[in-house]
Structures are given as C-alpha cells and as structure tokens.
Length: 139
Image (cartoon, rainbow, N blue to C red):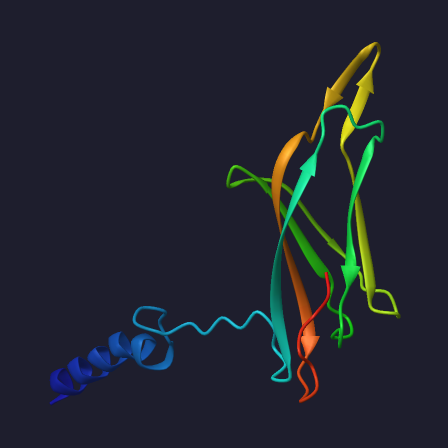
C-alpha cells in the first residue's frame, strides 16, 4: 500500500509542473499594435526624389494628422529599391503637424558624400482616434 501511495504521489509530482504552468506551444498570440479600441494605425505611402545636385544638406518629411491619438508618434520609414535605408519616429505637435529632417549629403574634407540620391518610397504610419466624422489624414 505504501508503495502504491508513493508511486501515485511521485506521478502527481511529475505532472504538477505541466498542469500549473502554461506552455506557449499551441497558444495563439494576439498582437495588437495599438492597444486602445478607438485608435487605429493608418499607413500612407509617398514617393520622394532627391536630386544629386541638391544644394541643401537636409531633406524633410512633413505633414499633418487629423484626429491624432495623443501620445503616439508618427513613424517614418524610407526605402530605396525595396530595401530600408532610414527609420524615424517624430512627435505630433498640438496643431496635428509633424516633421522629420534627415541628412541628404555630408562633407568630409573636400569630398561630398551623397547619403540620399534618387528615388525613394516613404511609408508613414499615423495613429488616429476613430470617430464618425473622420474621413482620413493629410500627408
């Protein structure tokens, strides 16, 4: 009898971790990019051309967010030929505007280095508050 009780107790001890601890195998992970139910993430795509003979050392991406969700930045991703070349996030000002400057060329001694030159795709992600009158955002 003692041997049977010891075997049952030992078997229970072996099963206890699998009963009490959740495993990640087979679990469904729900990934919510914006946790609030009344806030959605909008994506705008614009195209940008930076000439090689530009006299300015900086470029800028700017725009406005209508119905901006407070506390959420605008995320800017720049791609050349489908490959990422620049990522940034910038805060939305109280009037709904945003801007992000980036260096287009640099000078090292007598040599001018073109950091950006040619055609680019810019993805802009904005968090906006849903309401019945919102029809979109301006870029």
